[in-house]
Image (tube, helix red, strand yellow):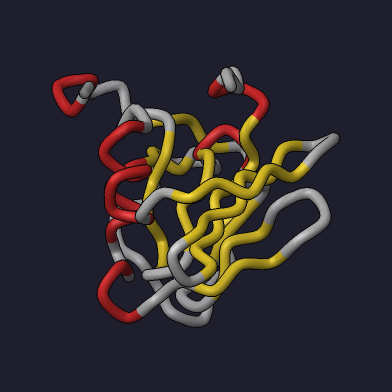
Amino acid sequence: MKIPFNEIVFVEGCGNYIKIVTENKTYLLLIAMKRMEQLLPAFLFKRIHRSYIVSLDKITGFDSDCVYLKDKELPIGQLYKGELEKAVIIINDTVTEEFSADRVHKIPFVMNTNFSNRV
């Protein structure tokens, strides 16, 4: 089975399985979450929780606790706080350098242009 990266909204861990969620369909696969994380390009996807990997392109905003997608909110795990902000450059009137727990970061934002993390 081939699913284009640009169609993936997020990946959810479900025990020994994962759900790959696209805008139109959900796929259930027998593969470990860690292995799926290794297969996805790091410059397009970010692990935000032990049970979630999200497409950076599909995020509409985030705060210290949640990632906001078009129709869904996903939790950000304690181990992954701060990692999402490192993966994106936030564009408001100026580039935000400090992360405030009480502030929700809304779009527009762009992916980090440092592509040295490509898999």
